[in-house]
Image (cartoon, rainbow, N blue to C red; front, side):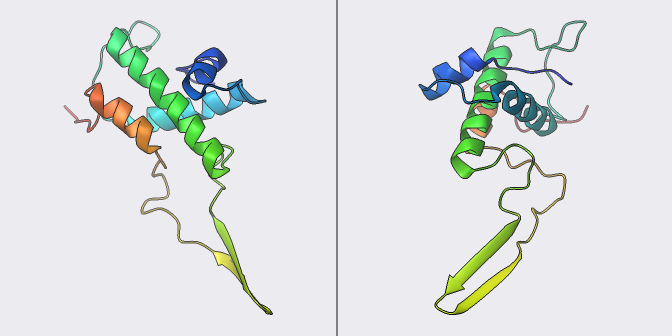
Length: 129
């Protein structure tokens, strides 16, 4: 498992509700999403690869909490499977099919509040040096 940038306690403080069952798993998956969104970002890290600047640490914690909040609100479990299938019924007619995938299969469905937290910390957009 990779780095996890927020705790269940931080998630609870962010949402104002008790952390949901499986919060550790949701936070770990959301942390992976944040790592993917920051592939080209430049920030100082320690020997373990964890961010060191308090502003960056807080932004990443906020972004992870926002990502989990977003996934819970959209019914996603962090696997990326939510929203892949649709179903429409109109009277006796029922249509089902696979929705179009994101522009890139590896694209992160980043929560708007997560994006803003990372942008405010100067982490987005990243650049490759």
